[in-house]
Image (cartoon, rainbow, N blue to C red):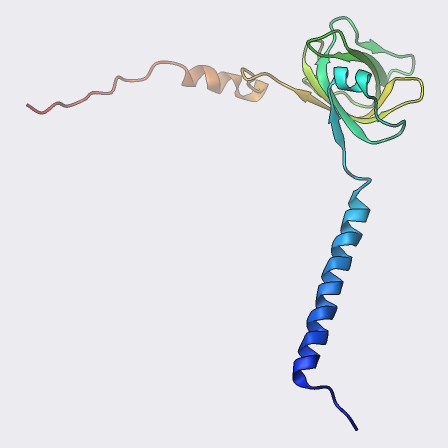
Length: 156
């Protein structure tokens, strides 16, 4: 009865462990490849649009005067624009974020339809650096009031 030497057993175990780690990494990469969302600005989407149905994110500003509620009452159509002339029509069905208004920043997660309209599954409204939540506005006003002056003691 022949047995494998301990040195060869370790080599076989290390080889199997290495193969298992590589296989797990490849499996994870293959599973996540469809989950990657690419970020597009309107001018990038107009110049090089993603494939129809590919999950992407579109970021920009909500164009002034573009928000329109459709007949069903829960679908909203609007236009996302950037600093240039690029304009991407967007359609979203659902509850709008509180900060979603014309002229505000928005990130829409979804996919480009065959008709050229971006169909959003999720909307993320962005705010500027001066934003203070309604609940904290009173507190922010009190914090901005001047406090007692600090005194510096000097040594002579």
